[in-house]
Length: 85
Image 1 (cartoon, rainbow, N blue to C red):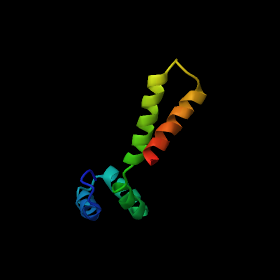
Image 2: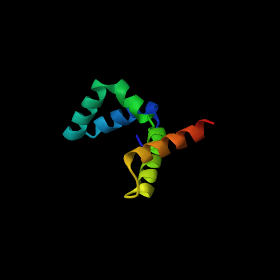
Image 3: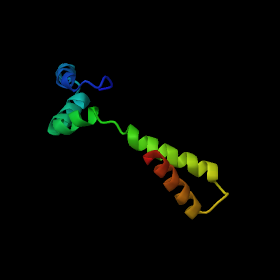
Image 4: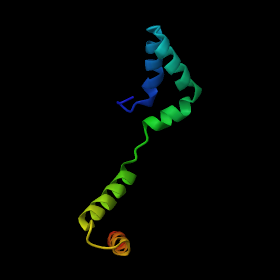
């Protein structure tokens, strides 16, 4: 899973099934119920959203206790406009 290789998931599931451990068998049966969603989630990356949230938190931290919400909103919109231009 950490290698981000969806095509090796089924091979891993077969090897894990051979271990004959009830907890792992149950886990594999749950994975098989929604295998398409599991494969899609392996390749999912939320880095873009995390970057935006991080920038917002940084600006908020810098302005903490100094100004109002309206000024914070204006500053964030200004940053966004600067990126567009």
